[in-house]
Image (cartoon, rainbow, N blue to C red; front, side, top):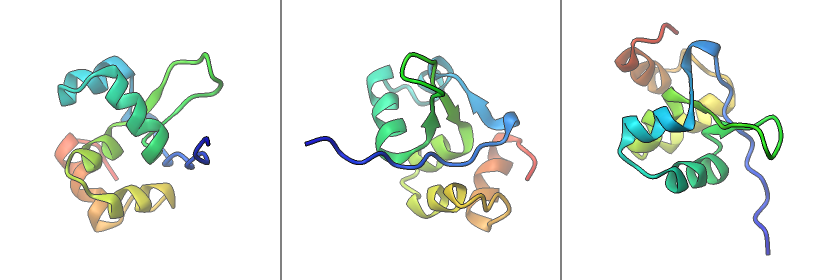
Length: 94
């Protein structure tokens, strides 16, 4: 049985990275990053054949196992302390 789709996190243009860049940053395989995008909503695609657009901030939160920060991003709470921590680490303004 197919799992229901998870809503992707909201992303600002400055934090969108490609699948290739996400793999480079994490040292993980494309398969793993695609799974995280589907299961955790850290990425989005306009349609099935479109390339993945991944939130660098959500990816960093995922690496640290910070599900609360991912939920804050899903709600668009870019200035929450949890989200701001990762954005600042990446040099992205809140």
